[in-house]
Length: 402
Ligand SMILES: Cc1cc2nc3c(=O)[nH]c(=O)nc-3n(C[C@H](O)[C@H](O)[C@H](O)COP(=O)(O)OP(=O)(O)OC[C@H]3O[C@@H](n4cnc5c(N)ncnc54)[C@H](O)[C@@H]3O)c2cc1C
Image 1 (cartoon, helix red, strand yellow):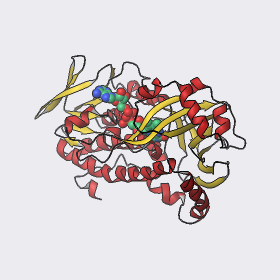
Image 2 (cartoon, protein in one colour):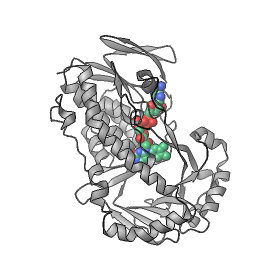
Image 3 (cartoon, rainbow, N blue to C red):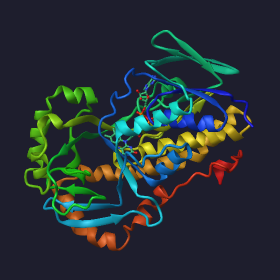
Image 4 (spheres, rainbow, N blue to C red):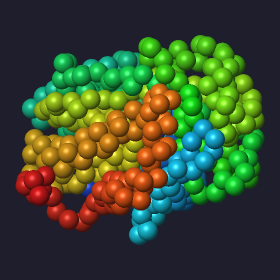
């Protein structure tokens, strides 16, 4: 039984409220502090929650049934719309769900608030004071808060990460900018529960049919420097659309999907970044969860799912282990190998999105053979999607070594 009774959770994205809910379930009182005043800030676009993420969210009572669209298979096509690979989900796991990011954020925060977990908006962490028996947070508005531990769930550009280790590596730009939009075009023959990955001659496009009509799509452009979402939006979306239309001009259905999208409907997400493995996940009474500790490339479709898993595992460790240092160390042991394996897998997928025409042609030629032989869904996703956390199992000091 741990002596921790209270926690400050910095960040009201996904990891923050999920961790706070899991801490509450462990008997620890947690308050979430979110920098933005407005809950919708910077959370445009869509994201996929994989079966492992759905399971971790379920452990804290977050149910996405009403907001997510099930995706049962992933279909790879070439620039002419010809299929060259199909990956079905695991037969014994629920389908992944694709959802609007804003909906996912809303649902986890609503769940936290419904269970009495306070979420305080407009509090940007700027510093901490550490003591032997507690930690206090200093916010940009001059206010402070104190607790037994402080959890940094403050995203890929985490302040807590640099407070733990001022030399921590910074996020790295993948060389790709992200874009997404809705098109009123319906792709003939597209299955309602499939996500399509179209590798065109000059651009990659992902898409899926939206219930009620039309198609959601996302794409990337290679770009020398990274841009924040705000910087990307400083370029008129008509200009980005012009470049994207040019890139998919010879591709089916990319050409038609972009024709069916109004210029002002494009969402520029900015540079896609990954966090390289960081040496320190915790120090003293401070610890990291979610993107602040491990942000795989968005291509993994695992960022939110891993964030939920980490929040739940941290709470189990604080519930069962005798002191803060041991709890944080075992939490890191339970998580590090898995999140780094997902990140390495995602890095490969990113490479495919920025392939040149020759490499794309080779991939479309080799993939049918590969999918019949070694590229089986079980082998590719089984280890990632089948991961389940046993909430009731007691964590011991050696749990991370099992
Ligand atoms: C384009 C794109 C597509 C993606 N697609 C997918 C996908 O399909 N599937 C998937 O699982 N993941 C996807 N991801 C990744 C996913 O969005 C993240 O992994 C997930 O949001 C991580 O949650 P988090 O709570 O750790 O961080 P965030 O969601 O970034 O939340 C961090 C929160 O902390 C707040 N904050 C920051 N600094 C401070 C501070 N100093 N004080 C107080 N609050 C602060 C922020 O305002 C924010 O609300 C995608 C990401 C991008 C960019």
